[in-house]
Amino acid sequence: MSAKETQMQLRCVIAGAGLGGLSAAIALRRAGHEVVVLEQAPELGIVGAGIQMAPNASRLLGAWGVVDRFRDAGVPAQAAVRRRWSDGEKLGEVVLGQRLLDSFGASYWCLHRADLHGALVGVATDPDGPGTPVEIRTGAPVARVVANGADEARVVTADGTEFAGDVVIGADGIRSAVRDSLFGPQPPSFSGRVTNRHMIDVATVQDDPLLAEILERPAQNIWIGPGGHVITHPISGGAGLYMGVTTSGVRDDEAFWSTPISQADMLAAREGWDPRILRLIEAAPMITAYGLHDSEPMETWIDGRVALLGDACHAMMPFQAQGAAQAIEDAAVLGETLAGVAPGEVAAALERYEARRKPRASRVQALSRANGKTWHVPDGPEQQARDAALAKGDSDFRAYEFLWSTGPGGAPAPADPVAAA
Image (cartoon, rainbow, N blue to C red; front, side, top):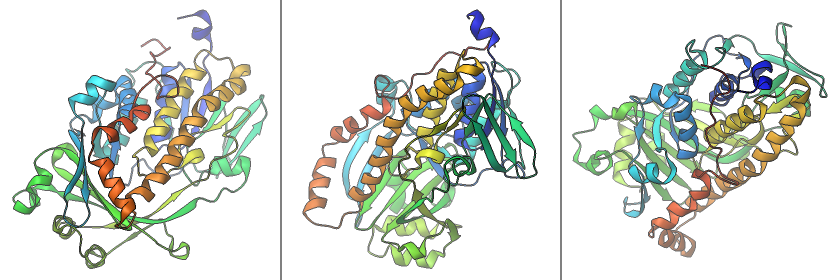
């Protein structure tokens, strides 16, 4: 460790204790910095459902010790299967499992968002980890941010408390108060799509012969069809199954963030689809509908010593399972860029962070939108061409190589912590 690195400990203030904010806290802690995270909720807790961590993200989480904390609750997917909407016919299959470990050095993990969040909290605050444990303050909603060029950055919370930092990170989601304070209101874009999410206790359906093929191995299954798709994958160490049912064609005036939905409405909406989907809907104890929003690409993510991260600057559709993964990549690059940096060098370092991350995140953001259109085309010539490409299997795998690999334009490689353990 150089003399410069031992002397330069920055005060980092992060708005948002979600997956991106906690990942940034871990990366900055590993870089030797002091970190405080401000969370608007009165206590830590995460809502949500299933989440998938592809190798570009799980490789970083493994290096940070996060995977070790969720390993028992997560499930490494052995395959990704694309199916026809009406009868579940297999359109194509991509082998994952050991193949990903050999090719990319990490697994494709399926788990519940709460288990990932808990693992991140544990690593961030662990007193035995490298550097200084992260401080998390709940009940601290951000009211505004003061960015005075390269000289100053402050966060003011709703009760008037000020938190000065050498660097401020806005990781407070698609409705970011940090972003809006700096750049004015940036309304999210409603996609015209709604996803109904629920979790199923596998013990309640494991003896159903209709579902045997779906439950026989840990795999991601996606039924793609006109105007929508359905995804399932294991969670809770295999004891649970996440199911997401997405419908397109919802009008803007019907947009919402989340609302309960009845089982009867769900079944009616999927009439004519694979009977296995209907059976799984019947097994769902509770279903919540979420309006899918993303954001338009921003001209810049930074202002002096303040930078945005994750959904605050590049919210994206979930059709490549990359929203949280791209935030984790942001965090890794942020930690690497700010390692050994003096306070007066922070603004220039954040410019390097943006230059490295913005092209890749913007590309993934655009591809995630495009995937939704590809999956939801009506039956016909375009659908037939898509299905023929999926039948090749490996072509689907190769399409993700740029995303899962490290190297120029690829995912960041794990960096060793600057701070002494």
